[in-house]
Every structure is written in C-alpha cells, then in structure tokens.
Image (cartoon, rainbow, N blue to C red; front, side):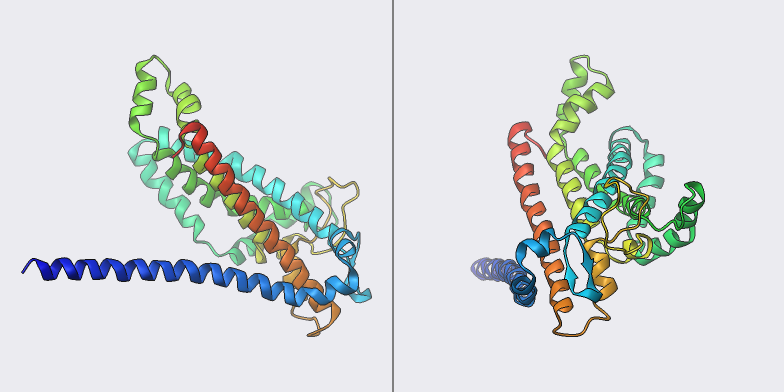
Length: 301
C-alpha cells in the first residue's frame, strides 16, 4: 500500500520539475524573441542613419528625419539619477525603521500603507503630478511651465519608494538575530549594530533593490510622459533640471501612435526601444554580479 503513494509522489515531483523547467526555458525564449524582433525592426534605421549617428546624434527631430539619441540618453540619465537619489534617501531609511526600530503597532500601520502606495497605478501618479507638482514647481521657481526634468524625477522618485522599501526591509529582516545579539553582547549600541552588522549583512538585498528600481525608473512611461515636457533636447547647461526634456519611454509613447508604419521614424523608435531594453538588461546583469560579489564578501542575505 505504501509503494503506490511513493510512486505517485515521485511522479508528481517530476511533473512539477518539468513544468518549472519549461517555464524557465520559455521565459528565456521570450526574451530572445523580443530582442530579435527589436533588432529586426531597428535595422533599417541603423543602416540608413548609422549606429554612431543614431546613438550619439545631438538632435531628435522626427519631422526632419533627424534621429539622434543623445538628448534622450542625457535626459533619461538626469531623471534616473535624481529620482534614484530621492528614492534611496527616503526608501532605505524607511526600511531600516520598519525592520529594526518601529514597534509592532507602528509597523502594523506603516507597512500596509507603504504596500498600498505600491498598488497605485502610474497614470494616477501622473495626474497628481500635473495637478499638484507641475503648478507648484512653476510658481515656486518662476518657470514658464512646471513640466521639467525635475518634475519627472520627483514624481518617479516618490512613485517607487514602496518597492525599494519593501525589498530592503525583507533583506534587513533576513539577517539572523544571532548577528544582532552577538553585536549587542559585545557592547555595541543599536545604531552601531545596524550600521556595522545589519547593513553589511543585508547589502546584497539592498543592492538588488536599488538596481531593480533603476530599471523601473528608466522603464516607466505614462507618469513621466505627462510631466517631463517631452521635448528632445539637451539642457543648457547640461545639469539644468528645470528645463523640459524627453526620455526613452516618453518619446516612444508620445510618437509611436502617430508614426507611419514602415517609415524611418517608425524604425528609429524601435531602435530607441532596443537601446532601452539593452540598458535595462545590462543593469540586471550588473546587479546580479554585484549582488553575488557582495554576498561572498559580507555573507549577505
């Protein structure tokens, strides 16, 4: 009687393993197909404009068939760096507070509130940005319009605070209590334990959260489209975050609906998508390598 359940359990395990393997292979195949499709649709623009002119060109004027991605790269980097600075300065301390300092009652209120913010659609953040943030920036800094790189950075920085907070808190809570108790037993204060024990041990998870948020910030579309101004030009000076700009995603979302199928403009937008996907993929690989190196060095969790 015991042989049949054992054989059935073994068969079930094999089926589950096969399904997981199929899922993993399918995800890799889908990623390869996406890359292949983007490359195929980008090739006409790459051949006609040239790789260097397409990637490093200083102007993007679709009406004149001038396609240079340098303004998009500069604007995307400015938005991503500022948004990540806001994101980290709020999200990581909040995660430390929730994981190490807050009491049960405080955490019972703050934790669901943070998770609830993560479920707000991006278009809602965009509407709030237009109604509240854009007029505020325009009036405060005497701008012609509040739509700017700064508005996009602030909106995205606030928008992804819940995701970085949740991942960082999980990483901090995964640190064994023995590490903390040993530090406290040696005479360290709570802050010293957090700084010199908990944070290094959880650094791989924190690094993963930061790099994941970079990809989310770069890949966000609707919220940034509504507030950034969507003008593809390099700010003068280059660090002028009060100027309007355009990111990879805002250009694709703003122009793809009006472009003629098969035109040079159409293929140039696919080249922008290929560049965006390449950057996000490289960041993911770097994130995995950095996380593994930090884990080996600190014994991270």
